[in-house]
Image (cartoon, rainbow, N blue to C red; front, top):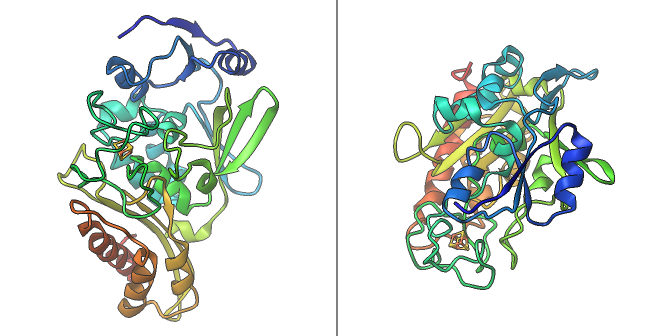
Length: 330
Ligand code: SF4
């Protein structure tokens, strides 16, 4: 690892100013992804600005009945929060399905939002990777792409976003609060991450020096009947091949509310709005769940190693909705 300067930020203004003024500076939270990337030489900051002393480590009630989650809340603490487990169970389940207990004890909510892809070519300096080195090409296109995306991809990059937490946040209409030198902005989670297009190295809509300070969850009664289902190659400590975050309200056999997001299939947490549209107001039965899944995956573009994901995503959507409609998920 090459040498770098270390600054422990005393307050948020100092942290934001330090990173905005220096293109080579990075914020450091739990460090579970950044430090690995620095060891591999993928991230090479001149200065690391440690924000772990800032007062963003609580989960608080909002006046409207939602929750405000500080960006430095540890993943394990958020998963265990009684309010999250009862009001937004999909979020607790998503967090517990990610990484290991040790990593969840270190990883922060803000860092989870900003973690980088686990595409193997991104971590291999000998490979062509537009995300690591813009303009160099993409070895995943015709290489080992079993884990890669089938929705929202471009010819520049087909990497997936690795977070489980963000998939639940996308389904829950979460809003990200960010602080920059010009003040505070609020960004819907679904607009926070970018699709790759021609610039896969730009992964979020954050401006230079902006720091994630909180994530807010709106009050959402339907989320009490929600589920996060993750399909992966082994039972623990693996990234999703496909995941589904879903919430469903059924009255008299009809869907009155549906929230759905997918993980493991796209370069960003994928809100499944087409599936929601098909479900809304229709019967809560197997045929409707299949139609919704088909509609969402209609635009999938798989390659030789990952085409199986479309069928897997359809089956996982149907299974998750079936579970929610029968109350098995409670
Ligand atoms: Fe790099 Fe994206 Fe291609 Fe992977 S898929 S090699 S991250 S450009």
